[in-house]
Length: 446
Image 1 (tube, rainbow, N blue to C red):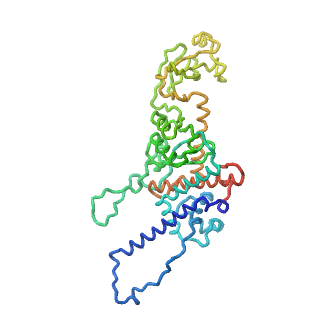
Image 2 (image 1 turned 135 degrees about the vertical axis):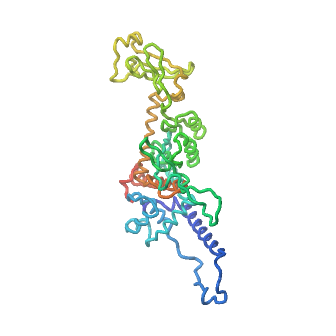
Image 3 (image 1 turned 90 degrees about the horizontal axis):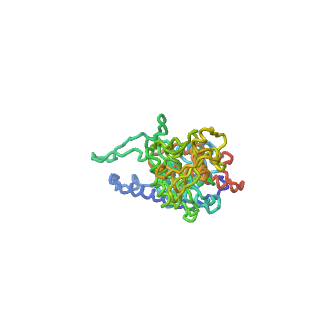
């Protein structure tokens, strides 16, 4: 991949932006040094003896090749190296094969890697590179048109202390408020016994390609249900409009299921949000209908035999859900269920197709009337959401996204961008070499 991928074709504008930013950084440092009021010429009458400086070339020393540094950060995860500005240079120094394929003629110092990563982060170049890579794969046909996108959040562990602050940095005494050491870290609870000091990252992928297409970063303590709007707005900003026109569904976890998120999905992507029922704050209801006992948290009626009825359809005229028997209805029959003769007679008077019940929509507000979650068509479509689970696992376990070693939202965004870049370069190479989109990374060699 290091030798065969068209690095210059894809990332030439990023290289130029990096060189411009590096030159500007050096110019600012030089101007700051020249304007320092504390630099006083103590010996103005002896320029040839004390203050004489060797004449420097106008060209200066040639910098380290951009693509060598760029490749070293993207390819290091494939060698089980956790990407950080201390581990990558150690890999370059200690692995001659890795150093050669990345294009290094000499072993750069640690400061060169630190400066490179900092310039890329400060100028948003990791994000620009990610956008170019994703759009390049779309143009090349590596990423085909998608009918459904999948969204989910995951945590990225932070090297930070929760609620830690520092002084403003002024030399003189002042009343400035203290500044957080990390402006994006938060406490993320996975369960009653498991918590992380972490950042929250929302990834978006296509269910067919299973490649991360966009990302959004939030504080670790932000509620998942409030992150969908910003995530979808980022998707609309990152991906080509023509490509997004084919998206009809966005599948997400049950925590996203509410009316506000449904409307935002329509407004931003003109798509339908597929999200299961979240029954946490819903109580069971007593159902006063012949042969029925209750309406459970999911809005499903239960019969005398303890069976859950199957949703047959929606009567839009009367605003009613139509439920049918899972034992006797031949179209909705569920294997392994049975009903006693006494219950059969009491419930539906021995009807050949069993009991049919109509429930008003107002009694089951947790069910989405536009695409009810109990329909088999919904379950089939929603089952494709598992693609995002595999994307998250791949990014964290295989592409070094599990932990970030720099602080601040911008650094976290750059960290995730690097992981997405590596995933897409692997996808491109797998199609070029095998003709198939392989999403893993252990079979391909760096």
